[in-house]
Image (cartoon, rainbow, N blue to C red):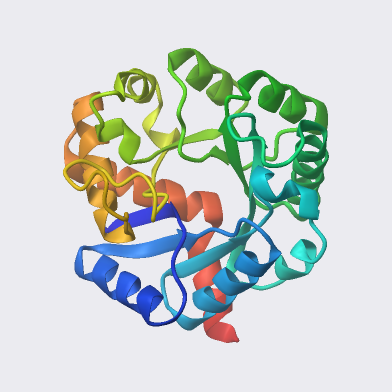
Length: 257
């Protein structure tokens, strides 16, 4: 077993190569690097093709919704692209109008359902509308709320829809008590961990650029919150990510190309 960083944003070029090497040295052998617009999704797909244990997603973040999703579907044909997203609603910054965010989110839910692919959700200050959109459009069979920031009530709503919860370094912050309460009610088979690097570095690296090598620190904070051994959290989150993204199958497809 080893760690899987189920949601990060790797850099390209030499910086990305260093991040991958440092992660592997720290026992993080699988990384899902996430696209937030067409250009970044293309970059992540190229990066994932270069490295064993690195996978990509293709999607449009709510911040970039005004640009639409043209070109995203074609990337989903690539074997190293394992999910749609990150997609969702963000009412904290509202870089795109809410109605545009809603249209683009709905389109990506439809893509995930049509392609039988996982959906990676970003939801910030938009819980009610996020749940309503999923209920209206149909929750994909494999759905994860990345960088979950709610409390037990929101976690219950996520779990009731069959989705997974993914926890970031925020769970290690002193202000993260609501997350620690949320993870305490999360079944182990619905749990994932991530860095969301370069953002949200966990304690004791808070304030520094985050990196996938530090996902173990997130796992340790989760283990402390649920009263389980760190090794168990490592094992279950590896297994959950493998199943959620079909990573063994993806590895075989990548090797066959």
